[in-house]
Length: 145
Image (cartoon, rainbow, N blue to C red):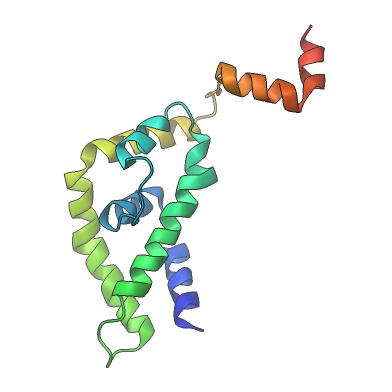
């Protein structure tokens, strides 16, 4: 297994939780930021689908890049041992520290996840999204009347 495949496997198996991925996003911010992370997280109240549709994939890519760039420092260890050691330090120190420093963002993420996982949550589209859906599927709009 190549190093990048190993990293992807480790991320899928051990850092796939939204809380861990957000922590990785905060600890290893991308070079180019279009929207501040605080705004992205707050926008999840209005657009919860963004978490699965975009943010999760972006944060996963950040985690893969971070592990690939930082986890292989001890050249006498195997790649798997290096990843195990690095992930242990992330889980024991870095991620809990990041959560403590950004507790507000993690609370919001928890609220969003709770809402998304509840059985009785209904998403109401905003007027712009409703207009777009009417243009895409006009037959749905005709059935209402």
